[in-house]
Length: 101
Image 1 (cartoon, rainbow, N blue to C red):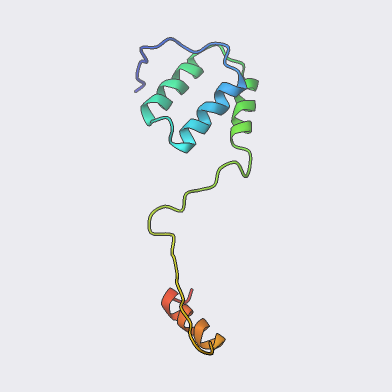
Image 2: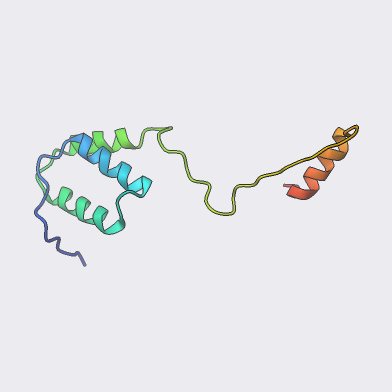
């Protein structure tokens, strides 16, 4: 079942438009509804597949996006040492606190 978009199709889209919209979708700038509307209108319009492919390749090139670790995946450890530290005891304490994997 496809939905109708009240806005007209997008015609003649350039690769930079596609790159920008992929970027907006991945970074969370554009919401789900806005992205659906854009992609429906782009695919319904008269657009060069090469331009769409170039825009996607530009937006998804490696190293451009750094994944968010998400909640509960980051950790901070503070260690206060006084006296003569024992490296092995410190390593064992950290291993026990973090859980061996």
